[in-house]
Amino acid sequence: MQSIKTKLKVNNQQKTILAKHAGVARHAYNWGLATCIYEYEATKKRLSAITLHKRLVTEVKSENPWYYEVSKCAPQQALRDLERAFKNFLTIPKCGFPKFKKKGKKDSFYLEGSIKILKGNNIKLPRIGIVKTYEILPSVPVKNVRIASFRGASLTKKADNWYISFKYDFEPDPTGKKRDIIGVDVGINALATCSDGSKYANVKAYKQAKKRLTRYQRRVQKKEPGSKNRAKAVKKLARVHKKVADIRADTLHKLTTWLAKNHSTIVIEDLNVSGMLKNHKLASAIADCGFYEFKRQLSYKCEWYGSELIIADRFYPSSQLCSQCGHQQKMPLHKRTYKCYYCGLETDRDFNAAVNLENYARQ
Image 1 (tube, rainbow, N blue to C red):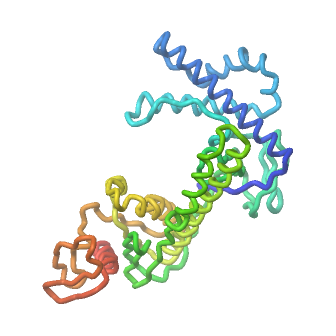
Image 2: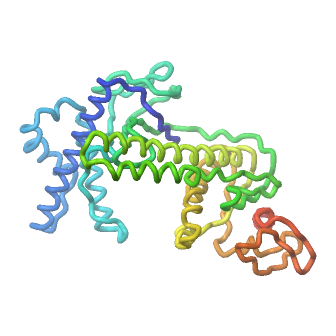
Image 3: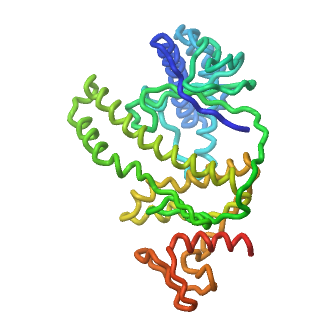
């Protein structure tokens, strides 16, 4: 399966109907959560999504006719999401208790049924009609879609825009490879250093926008809560966050696509990112790199393009080994040049680690 997420080009009328769908889904979720809390405290039983939907039809829909202005899929999927959230809370230790949804924060809803991708950049949605996108969509059958609006109040990646996402069947298409094995060492100074000598710079999107983010955040704090001026300031701040996220995502996508398309075997390290983030001096720089996202993208793109991804053991000393003779020595972080005391090799620290990762796959 391959997934697509793209921005919708909507007018004011379409924004209204999309907001109505999200509002109904949010209302159903919050009603279901309140009902589940009451029933669980009284009987210690967890209500299923089917039971909640039956009660929703008899108790809520009859009193709120605006439920019939939107697709029935929106409240149904909201109750399924609630059931899964409660199940995760009861079965997975680290999952927290489900929270009530708020208007304007990660508004989303689900649609299924007669969804058709028309010629060009048009998609036909039930109860909404034909909506345009900003890019050409593939001519594939679509069973269901999820539409989300990440608004300014949430300060997330997307600022006050509607996005549509769906999955479709995808046949992997192996590409011709330019190199057999390549080792990739990721870092802060250079995002990726490869064993063939190529380097990809770290754009450091958050660092470049940090002063602007601080200034916009200060403007938000000075505005009166609930005022229109505060809403405008929040939207401006969200746009800057969106730009930072887009720059980082664009860099990672270009790098991972190049690696997966042109190399038969790619070797990377299994980094302990959560442990690295505990270093408060480097936490911001590490988070700005997107190491986990790099690994995630590389995993599925290797399947698309017929490549193999090898993840070296977390304790493999790629930075300490000499790539020429195999001698191991301590390498503190401040040392950026590897000087082997045994054979005299002198090379860049990251390049030496990348060659060691390539040798790891040849063993």
